[in-house]
Length: 158
Length: 185
Image 1 (cartoon, rainbow over the protein chains, first blue to last red):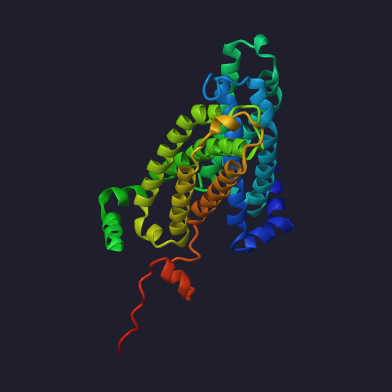
Image 2 (cartoon, chains in turn brown, cyan; image 1 turned 135 degrees about the vertical axis):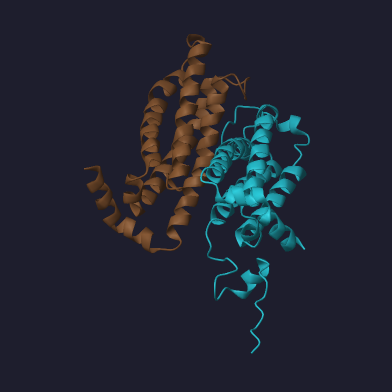
């Protein structure tokens, strides 16, 4: 079923257009990478704070609120550019272990970010133990780390 | 002379080893991308504050003090992994128009950070929207780093490589391609 989906994706107008253009893939890849830098900053600044690093004088909740629109905005750019890149080489991705690791980590990262991490980072700090904060930050960092690693290795044919 | 140097570099055993390694090169490149999140990510946070776009309730001096060590760490990893990536493919990178543009932009980003000393920061440290000069430095930094990422990504593509036939003359010159000697009959 997933294989059929990959075949279908490659045959879509979007996939065909990107594949037939010399410049489309690199340009979309650039937007994917630029958004990575922004989401990296938006995630790190909050996760580091939950680990007790970085902007220690500012409440987690404040940072999480400020970073949220940038995190969601760059995530949207990443998803749109990522799906476009996928349609252009879906069958190659299907055969790539790195791609599947990335997809699983990505689903987990998004679920975790918008449920547990959101709740903990926006909660009143008196009610959150340092241990909880730190665990949430480490899980978040680990998942996004895996997403970035998988992404880079799709390009190496891994 | 520089071309001779990078040619010598390309022939060193470690350069060949890194270039041909199955995992070495991809690992260095992955580290370069991870460090990008830390370095540019942290730079973006400071720039967003300087432009007044976000983190407006945090004093600028606090961001500068708390974030700078992380930015510096990211920068060091960025530079070391970047040098290794260059070292693996020296001649092609040296003659690559995007690589050369990236170096020029890196110098400009350095100058921007150097020139913009937050002088008299105390008077606007807590202002949600900093004065014009600070906002300018923030926007300039954002544009420069995003363009640097663009150039970095495009180094991988060979559209303007020296060995491409019918290359634009101006690109050949800017890339430092050696002129092809007309064949003597």
